[in-house]
Amino acid sequence: MYSATFIFAKKQFDDEFHRLDQTIATAAKSLPGYLGEETWENTGNGLVSNVYYWDSLASLQALIQHPVHQEAKAAQANWLDGYKVVISEVVRTYGDSRIDHMLAPSGQAAA
Image 1 (tube, one colour):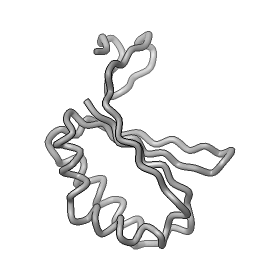
Image 2: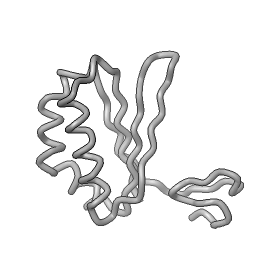
Image 3: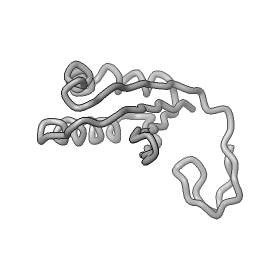
């Protein structure tokens, strides 16, 4: 399993940003191998982190190569004040089952 973490500083979002963001989300969810996503915001430094989970690197690569993702990447400077992407292999997940999460819902053992 892999995760792709997209960390960014926001500028002003407009209708075009929201259109592309929604289109990318729909595309990601339709791709084989998509496991889920979550978003975190650090109010202390203003950074936002979107974490996408994939069952394989090939699945993640399909989103990276998607035409709408490429369109958004080319225009990112319009809406973002800097970004970083972290691609990671997930070796293990675990917890006490009191928190539902797409990788280990409550009552289900984690890998």
